[in-house]
Structures are given as structure tokens and as C-alpha cells.
Length: 317
Figure 1 (cartoon, helix red, strand yellow):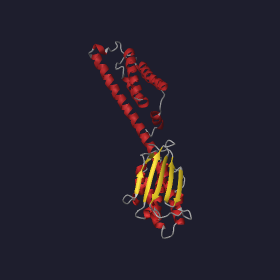
Figure 2 (figure 1 turned 90 degrees about the vertical axis):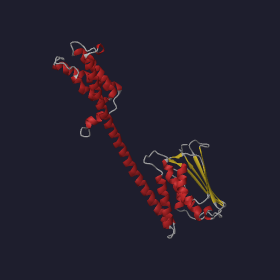
Figure 3 (figure 1 turned 180 degrees about the horizontal axis):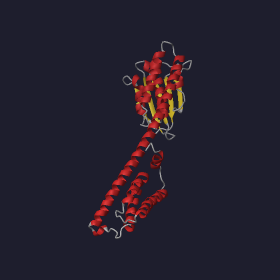
Figure 4 (figure 1 turned 60 degrees about the horizontal axis):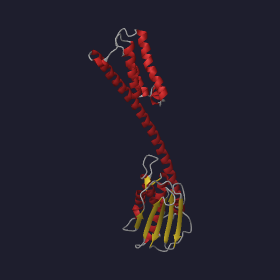
């Protein structure tokens, strides 16, 4: 079909019912006119010229219209091209001839419809492959841009001895976050799974209290939220509640309170050393700011521990 683009386009076209009816009438009229011009049915076999029309109707219009063409063709041929019309209800040879015609036409309709569905399925597969390729290219470009920005900012705001560890940790968080995303660009990610993946390297005993309803986050929120949680946990391990045995972290969230589809996530550190706000902003500060996917971020360095509130719109419960 690819070698005959016009045929392929005709098979793939969505034909309106009125137009399909007109083509069906033509599919009956043309074989009728051809047979009439040849011998007016004098040679017998009145249905012969209709078989190609039935097949083409199934191929271009679908099996329902082809079945209509079959019935109309049988009626016209039976009336015009036989001296004595077949009366299958009387039994005998008439019933046999009608049965053979029905079986032949049914086989042709099936063949034409299978070919039609095969061409359409291949077209849909090619279209999906194109979308997947475009999505893959888009995702690779975004990922490379994120990695580049992450490396530059980490190098700019890290001591030489801390650069490798800081960048490795963020890259691993990025890897876990992208692993939550499927191929389909519309697919969301589940909040519990995201939290578990982001906090897995920092869990030890009962240092974390994690509670919240199940919900699906928009794709745009998956990577930035995972990186934000990784940054909060990294800072808590170095300077905050997770740096001492008695420290712990509460991560709680609610969905839809006050505004439908809005997730409010609260990070709170308890039992850690006194917190002092950093004197300069670094890569972590950039990750803990409102951005695409994170509609609201509020970070507070309180004496009792760091608290961070994150808001994400478009959440589905």
C-alpha cells in the first residue's frame, strides 16, 4: 500500500455516511452497467461482476457497507439477469446457488475488511512510533539540559572536595525520578512511590514519618519534587535532624483541601541541632524554589528544624 499512496489514503480516510452511501450505490451500479453492456446476463452467472465491487467496498468503506453492497447486488442481479429469479425459500438448486453466493461474498467481505484493518493498524503503529521518537528526543534534550545545569551549579556552589558526592547524589535522584515516568508523555506518577524512591537512601529505622493519601502527580512535578525531597534529605543528613541519632523527619501531605486537585506537602524536621539559615544560595536553593511542576515552595529555617511547604496543582486522587 505504501507504493500506492492514493490507495493508502483512501483506506485511511474517514468517510461520512452520506458519501459512503453514494459510493455503495456506485459499487452496485457500475457492475450492473458492465454486465448489461456485455450480454445482459445471457451467459448466466449473474453475480460474477459484483464480486470485485464487494471486495473494494469492504476495503475502502468497511464490512457493514460491503454487506449492504452484497445484498443490493444480489437483489439487482437476481431481478435483471435471470429469466426466472432465484427463489431460495422454495429449496433445491435455487437455495444452493444463493448459499454459494452468500459464502463467496462473505469471504470477500472478510478479506477486504481484514486488509482494511491491517492497513489502519500499521498506520496507527507508525504514528505511535513517531510520537515515541519525538518524546524520546524531547526527553533526552531536557535531561541533558538538566544534567548540564546541575553540574554547573553544583560546581559553582560546592567546595572542591564535596563536588563529586553532591553531583553523584543529585544524579542518582534524577535517575530515580526519571525511572518513575513511563513512555507515555501523559502518564502521571504516584506520590507514594515517588516519596519512597526519593527517600530510600536516607531511611534508617523510624527516622521518617510519611503519611498522605494516594494520588497521581502531573508529569511536570515528578522530577522537580524528587530532586527537592532529595535536597531536603541531604541537608537534613549533613546539618539537620538526620545528623543526630534522636532526630526525625515528618513528611505529611493532603490533597484537595480548600482547592480541588491541589497537593500540599509539608516537610518538618524534629529533634535535630539548632538550624541556621545559609549565608549564600547554592544549587539546593535553586531546587527548593517555585518552578515548573512545583507551583509553590516555602522554605523556613526555624530554630527547631527546617520546615518546607510545597504546593502542586493538577493532582488526581
